[in-house]
Amino acid sequence: MRILILSMPDTAEVIDSMTRLPNLATVTLAGQLINHDVKVLDLVVHKPRIRTPIEKAIRSFRPKLIGLSAMTFQFDTLLRVARFIRSIDSSILIVAGGYHVTLLAKELSQDPTLPLDFMVRGEGEATMTELADALENNTTLSDIQGLSFHNTGGWTHNPKRPLLDTSTIKLPNRNTRTNSNYYYLGMPMDVIETSRGCPFNCKFCSITNMYGHTFRPFSEERIVADLWNIRKNGAKAILLVDDNITCAPDHFRMVCRAIVKNGLNDMLYAVQASATGLANNPDIVEEMDKANFRTVFVGFESMIQTNLKDMQKPTNPDINRITADLLHKHNMGIIAGIIVGYPDDTRETIAENMRLFKELKPDAIYAQYLTPYPKTKLREEMLEAGLVTNKDDFSLYDGFTCNVRTKHMTSDELFRTLKKEAMAFSLSFSQISQNYFLRNHALSLLKSVVKTTYSDIFNILTAKRYAAKFDV
Figure 1 (cartoon, one colour):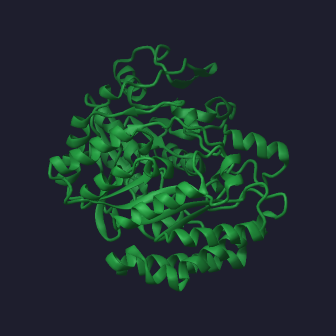
Figure 2 (cartoon, rainbow, N blue to C red):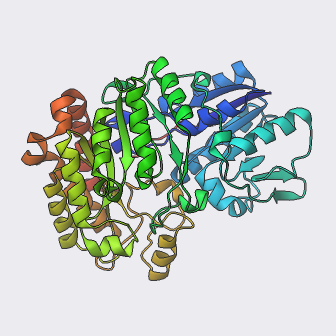
């Protein structure tokens, strides 16, 4: 069977200013569909004009099944893409997967106009493979765990599929991509996962709705084989997108040592990490240095203890400071994850929080608004407290659009306060003079600062996000 898999083009503008990330889920699915003819079209490469590449791919490849992958804030685009596909060829079957479908499949199926034939809930590798095989062989769908499907009587939601044994997940097939041009700081790049899941329970996170409180590592052999494939395809930089790789120190040590042992440390590595995992295991930072990890995104979230405690975030300001010092010592660029919009936030607490973040001397900040994602404990609490200002338009749940208020600030006041503080932070002399990215990637950083600053000024004046419009 010919299968076309699409990922949505929506990305936050602050991400676009530094990097263009490929979608890993789509090529991982392609790697499982070994008995089928698969192509992957990553629409982020084509945005905002995505109509032509979609139509061209359909007319030239003539797929029988199209898979669509989307996060919550991308799901509105997914629906528009699905309807556009229907307008080209109504006989094509359409399946959707990802976090949003997993969380809200039953709610979505109540819409009689939903332009989907199937929804894959949870991890999609086995479910998608079984679906494709069943359609190819015209066998029953009722036994496929994790599948929701539409029939004449409405929607049927099969039982949930247990979490997969990672040893059964074949390598991603990146050769199925119909396009490329992914970059990080001007270098060709790709992404990899070495584990799935996180054992923690932060109130604002929806990962536990996908994986529970589990951590499942991939084997060293698989990780090394995947890195060799990435290198062979020409990447010079790699982002590890594990949900929480530092919660399992022995696994992360193994990854770093395997990179060095196999001579793969000539590529530059970036990783998402928890402050607690690094502060409690300082030797790991030494291993990261040897493996050529040069950029670390750390979810510090706040430097105010009451905020961290309220969100059940397993860190504190002292741990954050220890982590920042460790990373600076080993010449790694720090991207500080910051969240504002906690229920008790005021202009004064936000300003104080940013002042304390400056003391960490991060090289870039990734400042977001507290966002009440579907099915999270945070959403329940904020709805009950009347602090959610946008309850239904999930296309704005990208983390950079303000959908909440605090007990002391309106949504617009909160929006402008963070934008002003973030812009002042990025343009401060201390930030520029000691910046890791400026020392090592000056041109890319300057482009990022100019683009982000322009966007922040626009947003401060309008209190609206500057959203890309797609031609579907």
